[in-house]
Structures are given as C-alpha cells and as structure tokens.
Length: 69
Length: 321
Image (cartoon, rainbow over all chains, first blue to last red):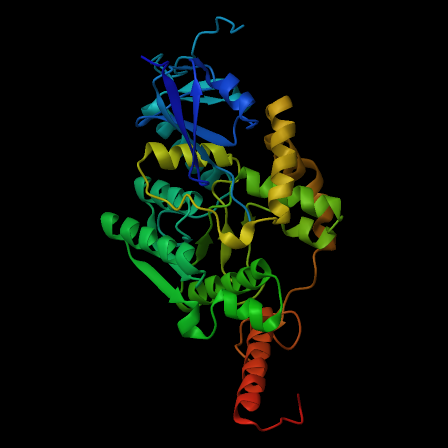
C-alpha cells in the first residue's frame, strides 16, 4: 500500500496538488509561499486555523480571499 | 520540527475555533465569529451615523463576497434594503456574478434592481475597447454613474458598498504614494452628498478585513463568485494589497492601524484640499466637474467611434472624423 497523499485544491486557479505527510496549516502555507490572512483553508465544510494540523489523507481547499480591480 | 502549539479555542465560548484573527490575537468558533462580525458592522454603522432603521439602504451588489456579505449582514440586522446589480458584460464572469446575485436576492425575498450596461448603451468591453481606456477605469466610471443615478431616481437616502479594510488601506497607500490630496480628503467611511443628485455613500465594512469578510461569507453559506474579474490581473490595487499583506504578516494589526490612524489624525488635515463641489452635466443632469460627467464623456466617444465605423462600413467619409 502506497503512502497517503494530501489532496489540495487551490481556488480560484482550480489547481490541484498532492503532498505527502501530515503538517500544520502554517507550515503548509509557508511551503506554498502563501501569506496567512490572504487565503481560507477549508477541510470538508469547516475552516481550519493556521495552528491546526492537516492529516495525510485530508482533502483540502485553499481559497484566495484577496480581490482587486 | 513542528512545535507543540495547541489549536486555539473560541474567545467567547471556549469551543474549538475555526477562525483565528492575528490582528486581534483572537479566535472564534463558527457561531461566535458570525456574532462578532455582525456586531462589528453594526457598531460601524452606529458609530459613524451611516443610516438608521427608518431609511431604505440601496446596496451595491456585484456577486462577490464583500457585497453579498454586506447585504446579508444588513438583512440579518433588520435594516430595510434594496439591492442593485450592474450587468457588466464581461463574458462568463459577469454571467456568473448575475446568477449568484439573483439567487441570493430570491432566496431571501429581497428586491433587486438590475441594470444591463449593454442594453443601456455599451458594456464594459465595448466602453473600454472603443474609448481605448483601461477596462477598470471604464468599469469604475460606469459603476459610479449608475449607482448614483439609481440611488437618486429611486429616492434612496443612502448607498452602501462592501469596501473592506483591505480595500481602504490599499487605496490609502495608493493615494499617499502620489500625495493625492483631493482623494485623501474624500477617503472616509461616510461621504456626504455634495450635489442635489448625490446620496450619502457609506462603507460599513471599513474596519473589517478582506479575510474576515470572506470567512463570514463562507460560514454563512453564501454562494459568491470566487473567480477574479479577468480584467483585474495586474491591477495596481492588488500590488498595494500584496505589500500591505506582507507587512501585516510580519506585524499583525498594521492595516487596521494604518487606516484608523489616518482617519483619526491625518484625514482632517486634508479637508481644505477638497475640490469645489461638482456642477451639473449638460447631457444627463448628473453631477459633473465640467460640462459633461465622466460617463457621458465616455458615451459620446463611444457614439463617435460607432459612427466612424458605420461610415467606413457604408463607404462614406465623415469630414469631422
């Protein structure tokens, strides 16, 4: 059985990525070079804070909140 | 190595938090965040004397998170509201925006005034293309004109928009970078009318961040347009927001302090820089700085370009072109 991979969907880009292993939200944002407070991190139908852990099998949505123009 | 930091608990009820606000070092569960957010908006409305419960508020609604969150808060707080939505004609983005706005209004039994720019005269791509202006500039001019016009013609006392703290801080940074004294004089959460056909303009979310507004929309289950306007790529406002968000990450509370302290200490100093009140447009009778308002200037140019194109199509020449 292969190792579990976390599925992450980035919106509005509709980009999907997979990463291995559990990690804290703040660490994930740092890896993705995203600034806290500029995105919502959503697991299922709940938001998670930058202090929470995401498990290796989680499906996560990272939604940009900054709009302009 | 990951440090053993406990996920925060809700500041009000001690349940597991879903939202952490760095600038306040506070966390909230779903229900308590919604309570906190609605109370913050209501406090801004009361503190700045934006409007009362006896007034009907015209809410400018784009279909994005900020305007739909604002309309939701005002409805939930018991204010009398009417929505106004401009159909901009920006391909699928505008169609999606209109669908979501209409669905929101219907689900809550609210009146929605729709203005189709294309049917009125020219949509945003036409306005921008024929006048060779940036799409955002043409769009902004059309929005301001129609919001003012509908508010005036409908007899509404006040027009509310969903501008949030990030919008205001980015605009302030842009105005300061160029020392735009006239714009700094007008950057306030409440703008009183300076012409008989203007109405009061208010921004109840001016102290709430873009993150808080998005979180509110998500937690309330509001179906808003997540996609960005295709014309916004490279917009200067996004550059200013990026700079401010980097500062905010290093120094939480920077955006709020920047804008609140501007309002408290600096903004009054620019009052004398405010331009003289507008006159009246000779074409549409709305406020104008000159013989024609900015929107009519655009439309006149659109008409001229269309006539040019027709002349070329029919093989005649127009000596005035």
